[in-house]
Length: 191
Image 1 (cartoon, rainbow, N blue to C red):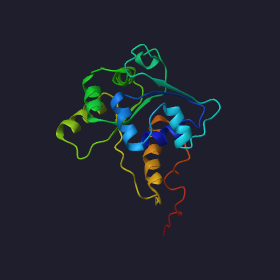
Image 2 (tube, helix red, strand yellow):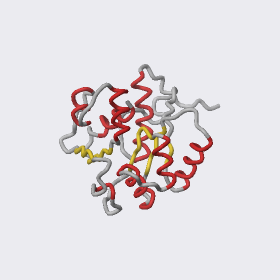
Image 3 (cartoon, one colour):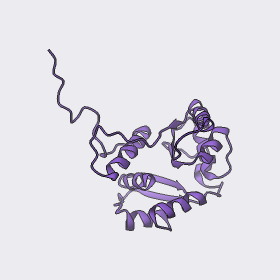
Image 4 (cartoon, rainbow, N blue to C red):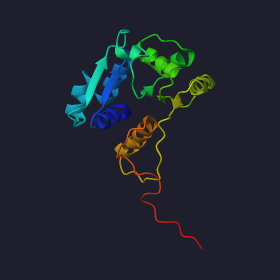
């Protein structure tokens, strides 16, 4: 649901979005959202996504090493792995580019582009934590899906959008999901 909400928000903007969904990711998505098929169709028909006229969603085969994200010469603003399994985290942490997803993540690290990994496991083992530290030291960003409550969420979607907003903040993409801290708070009272 995090990934679907992120995509729904991204396609509202004039962006080119490249999606790499692994076979395991497709199985998890099918189980969790009860839908199969192309993400563009699922977004529009089942998640009510309204696409900006200049938005473009490109879905890549995770085994296609000739796709644009496999090359450092493909310029983009960053990458998000959402959700990020511990298998994918371990591959990224060790430089194992076994499919297009992990190759694209490896490219982000070597080209110093933003790479945001949103892990899906809990609790975390020492191995998970060490892999997260390795990715962080290599320049990646670990963003656990831990919603805050200071914005007084009313729905599950509010909680999901809190995490989605954090992801978008890391990529420098504007959004209207949350107000900046302090914009709705009363002014400080000083004596």
